[in-house]
Image 1: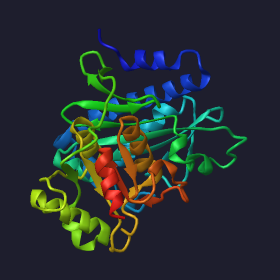
Image 2: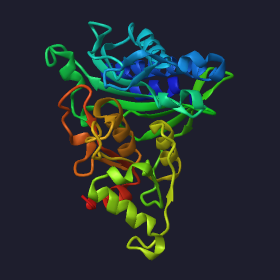
Image 3: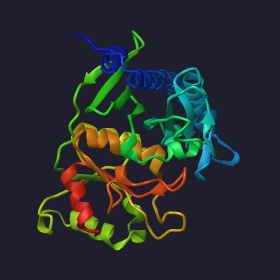
Image 4: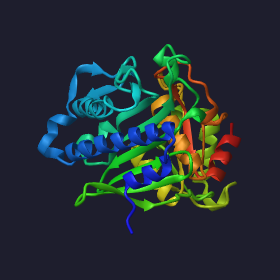
Length: 327
């Protein structure tokens, strides 16, 4: 018998008030994802979605496209009547107030991989759910800057050949696929487990000349193959949309690497701790994988600012540990 996302969330929440709030928030994000998936699926028929908004950049300084903003608006529309007090978004400079009585804050990257919108490559939405109460966090920015280990739920939607939700509620990682006929997300995999070992890594190798010495040595050893110190041949895969690269890792193992390098503005990589690294690290660990910035477990890092960037390595735990050993 098929298990819908709604049924799964009901079983998770029971009568617990906090879990009911989390379930409501995740459900609303999934509903927004269906609307975003419909827009993405228009492809070249809506090529204006891929256009850059004049000279605008988002709060993190990256180019902002029309669909980035539309995706954020879709998420706000779904969350504003729910249990979420504030939304932190990669596209916005400050937290967005939603429901003054809310017991949660949510951080989102509304459209990860938006640079690929016009190339028909999978893009997605990443989210993180954190606890909130006004007494503990009179400043909503502080609520969004909790350690990743404080997350109550996290996940990402991927808009590709199928629309998929990869989710954790803190008890394993699940995969749900959208059934277009019913409009429901259906449980496709109840317990994802990332293979501990791998022969596959994902990295933008064209930047190798800019990398720090530890990362360059790691990749050189991988390239040496079975005749080198790693004594095995590796494959490289790189899509350029983190959600697409992540889903490949959740499906068949591997590691994703986005390190810092010597280029101006890339010293700490380009990924955001709050909107991307923390939720992906939480999902990864719940699937028996690991995530690090090279020296520190991602979920142990205390954010210093809302749009903080951070190096990120995640995936098969043995390979993540091997990469960390080079540092």
